[in-house]
Image 1: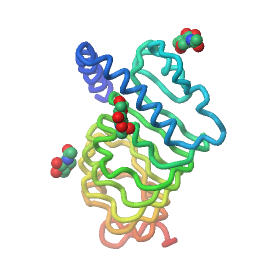
Image 2: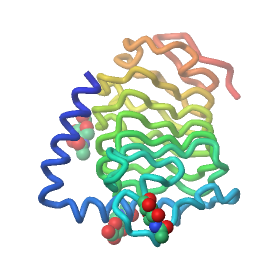
Image 3: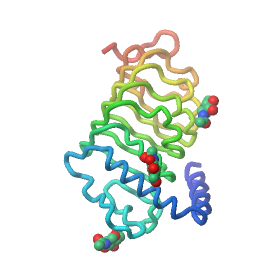
Image 4: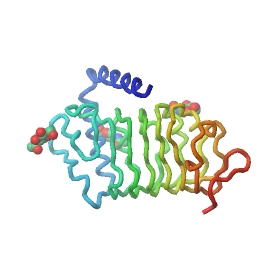
Length: 218
Ligand SMILES: *[C@@H]1O[C@H](CO)[C@@H](O)[C@H](O)[C@H]1NC(C)=O
Ligand SMILES: *[C@@H]1O[C@H](CO)[C@@H](O)[C@H](O)[C@H]1NC(C)=O
Ligand SMILES: *[C@@H]1O[C@H](CO)[C@@H](O)[C@H](O)[C@H]1NC(C)=O
């Protein structure tokens, strides 16, 4: 099912491309340029991200960047896990308008997840922000990302409650908010998805049903 909806998205993209391709391509390049500018990269692992070469598809060879086609500058996935990256969530990702997956796990990202996440990551199916130092609330806007299959927010310092809207994510197969500082009740509809208790472990006072408390208070 995911594959067929991806295919439909892709076909729509190609159709739209005939009209706005130059814009789309430029937008994806702006996206990556902005991501590189907003992240500190102490180990210089983004050195392949060199924007001086204007050949179509050149950005597809950048570390962690996967395009829909290798010779077409349209970004499908960004995978920058475990690269020692620092800084806030890179808002420039909004300009990668055909993006379906982003993995920034195991870095040192700080600050809040953008509250307008639904506009920043419009069509994503996979979001992995686990093992960073993100703080603040889980934006309710995640509930609008209706293509989402995988949402990993574990091992951060997120606070507040799990937004009830997350139960709108009918395609969600993997989900974890373990090891944060969340509290309140897991939305009852989300409980019906039967994610394992591990998905919720080690928070402040996160409870399921009436009495079960996941993990011990930190
Ligand atoms: C520019 O990028 C293309 C595609 O990645 C590559 O084949 C070409 O060698 C590059 N040109 C320069 C001058 O690096
Ligand atoms: C997207 O790119 C445009 C330039 O093409 C830029 O003005 C805008 O600030 C970018 N958006 C973000 C969120 O970085
Ligand atoms: C997000 O979802 C909520 C609840 O389903 C809805 O009220 C809101 O209009 C949606 N926002 C967007 C931007 O789609």
